[in-house]
Length: 453
Image (cartoon, rainbow, N blue to C red; front, side, top):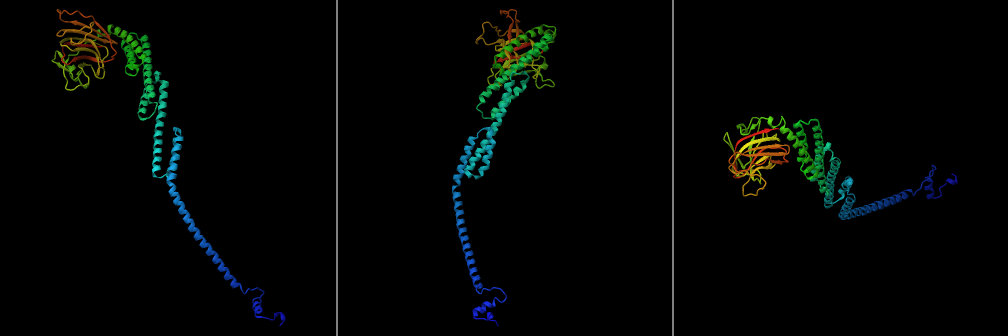
């Protein structure tokens, strides 16, 4: 055996036994591996222990942070609410309502209950502001319309409707301009009625040049202009209204005079007997008789004469009613305007007044033939019939005029024959009225009427 192969020691032999095939073998490898595993395990243990400690510390940190956040939540809630209030105040215009609402709704979930309630109140106020903003927008639109068209006769109906709409809006809205708007409504209604009346007056004037003798058509045309003004309580406050109505009165009176004396006037008409039994009965197709009486007037008809008395009523139709009214009209739906009344009346007890164009309530013309108690103040230039005497009366109501002729029937009376009484009236339509105070009593022997229209 060569000397290089000869084993000189056990150590050499051990080493050589692991290098026989050309590979190196470390006899301490197992020990080294065990040491490495120990080191790795130690490191892992340290890491795990560090992680556990870190996790514990992190959990404690989170809990502390949560506790801190929870403790600070009321402060943050109040701060956020203050921010919302400042934002609401800084953006208070109607144009910013929706942006403010969105801003608050997106953040109100971060508020605590007390602050959330306040936020809801802000949202409610925004909703109300939006409603009021819509009212103001509609109000401005209608207001601009009436301002632009109040004096335009072609827009009367639209202006009146807009004025009514403005009144309704004012009832629902809270606006500092309310009083100013009310004045604008008042002005618009007056101007609109006046403009419409003037337009009607111009049409009537044109018709008068074309149909001079068509009295009925002309009278109706002028009366329509007068009605527009009469029906507008606001228009009565404007000085122009009196001027227009005075002009209408002059023209209708002239037409009425021509009409009354024309072949188609009163003389051409057959008189209607107001003491006919049918006038006291409800006719077919009608709701009530032509004769009516208020609670303080009593009618007694015996087939020939009509007795009218003023009595104390069981109830008052009007709170301040001072006298009763016996009233005749051919129809409650179509009151008369131009008529001639002839009657013979005996004044049994003082307190009777003949009324022209009697309408509802106190809408009437009075004081043409009045028999007031002697104890009351009397006009020294007036005519007062005597108690117990009988008179023939002719009352002609046409245009704006009242004409009455009084004739005592007793030839032996010492009364001076009164001159015809001429008066004017603003009342447009109505029937025959007999006004009697409590205790007054008259007896009517004859009563007939001719109606132009």
